[in-house]
Structures are given as structure tokens and as C-alpha cells.
Image 1 (cartoon, helix red, strand yellow):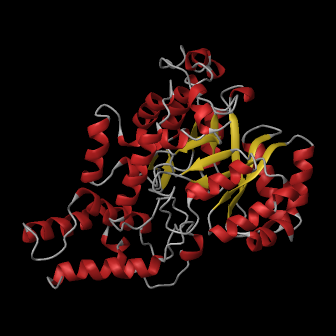
Image 2 (cartoon, helix red, strand yellow; image 1 turned 45 degrees about the horizontal axis):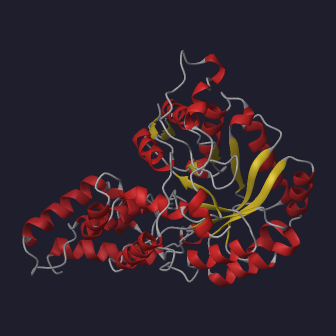
Length: 438
């Protein structure tokens, strides 16, 4: 089906109201109220909105460490399932290893057939067959299940890494046997790399018959990706092979939900009542090969806003797609650091809050509080406010000036950001503000 035919049929799916009868194990006197409308589906049985479990809400535990707020997770999962959100994407390494367990606790309150599990073989630190099998079996145990709906080889950049982590260790043969036995319903991979690396993995399709592939896709990366692997290219290659696509980073780490004011005004002038995030989600959902769009929802208000978008989903027109492509090009002119807040770089051995530093820097550019120099109107006041806000947002011991350039973080970054270099640049900028030498 091409996009023109798809637009005629988009939005057909499972009624959210039908899921409102789900009551997990008698834990609630009544089920969460479903919103009105129908959850969109591009593929039968899979809600177009998927729940990304990398950004569960966090609280401080008794020992002062960050732990997942299980009560809020349960509340969001209840509302999501009641409205047809049945795809849950997690990993053994998300949130310092806490994500899978929190997702399992929330989902295991419901019958297994009412939710679909997507988790990953995240064998970065130890790709041995023994450790990989242990990780796989641990996922099955946590979710009290004998099958995983969607199993991903986590964050592959190309054929060399694939061979090192999966073929040379023999674990790929094990996974294919598990798939043949029905313990893995669909086997695919998540991709972070260059166009060359993507082509290498596509060349392996004849051998492994990928059931689905997870890529970073949004209206900026469609034609303006940081690396040369534009989402438009990857989409077309997957579409030619009829491989279903799962989308990660539809909001590019939240940046497309909090655009610089000039760009936000353009979107708001067209759809005053819709959120900025809704534009990004509708962009992804307007392409028929997209099976599921992941949203890492930290707050229930995020979920409610997303449900407004995906219940009775309205695909974008060709004119709106062209408009967003222009907005995406304009977004890149702001030269923000392409950090998505995935936390893969954490913890930093020197205690630096790497995502926090990048977010502060990007937010200042986006909201117009970035200090460019003495010629700027209100420079003295803006300079004082910027420095005070930086100290308030990022504890002194976790700021950019503590980076020693060890580079431990670089290999973990799926965006391939040269983190030490960016830390030096930000520290130099902050120091020039302090010394008034900008």
C-alpha cells in the first residue's frame, strides 16, 4: 500500500473503549476510563502509539539514589492499556537496569495476551554467549512469560559490530532456534549508525529475514540527520523490503515538543489547539510502513496529550509534510547538540551530568536566553541570569568543567556526539561569561 491509499484507510484500529474493561487482577474497583476514539493501527493488532520505557518517572529512594516511581508507572500503564496502547519497549540496561523490572511489575497485573513486549539483547559490556543467554532468560523470567513479542539486537551500527556481538559468539543461532520454537515472535534490531552501516545490515536481510527494524525517525532527521543516515533513506530501504518499522526518538529527545519560539509559532499558527508534539507524532504515523511509534512518557499528562493525537488519528497531508520538512531544516540552523537524553552515557565516572549539561545548553538556545555577547540587548542581566540558572540546574560538582576528557562516554552515545569536545566548548563558554570575555 502506498501513502496515497494509506491515507484513505488510516486510523482504523482497536477501539480504546473496548480496553476499558481491563481490570488488572482485581487491584482496582474500576478500570481507568478510556478516552473516546479509536487507537490507530497501521498493522493489525499493534497500537500505533507505543510506550517507550526508557523514561519512567523517577523518585529518590531511602538511600538517596534515583529509583523508578512504580505507583506512577502502574497508573500510566493502566490508562495506556485502557486506550489501546499495547506495545511496551524496554531493555535490561535502561535506567541503570531498573526499566524491565518496573515494566514487568506493571504489565504482569494484566493477562499476557493484552500487552506486547519489546525488549532487547543489550550485550554491550559482555557479548559472550553465556552472558547473552543469561540476559535473554532474565527478561522471560521478569515478565513471567515463555515468549517475547519483539526481540531486538540492541543498537547496532553495522556488520562488523553485528558479527562481533551476535555471530561470532554463536548467540544468533540460539536466537533463531528460539524464534523457530515460538519463544521469540519477531526478531529485529535497533539501528544507530551511518548509511554505510545500515546498508550492510540490509544486505543481511536475505540471510536473517528481519521481522522489523527500529530506527530514529522524525521530521528533522527525515532529511537533516546529524549523520548521513537520513530517516527518509532508511524508510525507503525498509519499505522496499516490506519490513515493518518501529520508530524511536519521534520527538528527538523532546526537542520537537519544545521548539525555539519562531518555529513553535509557525506550528501554533496552523493548529492552535494542538501540542507541538502532536505534529511530530502525526508526521511519523503518516507513513504506512510504520508499525509503532515509541514515546518515552514520564508523566501522565504526556500520555493524555499523546492519546489525543492517536485516538482517531489524522495523518498529515502532502502539503503539511512539506511544511514540516522546511521546519526541520530551519531547526538545524539553531546548532543544538543532538542529545536525546537517552542516558546511555551515564553514569559518568567523574560524576558529570552529561545529559543535564546538554539539555541546559539546548534549552537556552531554544527559549532565547542564550547569551551571545555584550552587543546583545540586556546583556548584563541575561549574563547574570544564565549563570545563576546554570548553577541552580546543574550542581557544581556535575558541571562541564569537571570533564577530564577520558572518553568513556563516547562509545556509548548512539548519536555519536563527541562528548568531551562538547563539554570543553560549553565549559569555555561558561568561563567566558564568568570572566566577561565573551
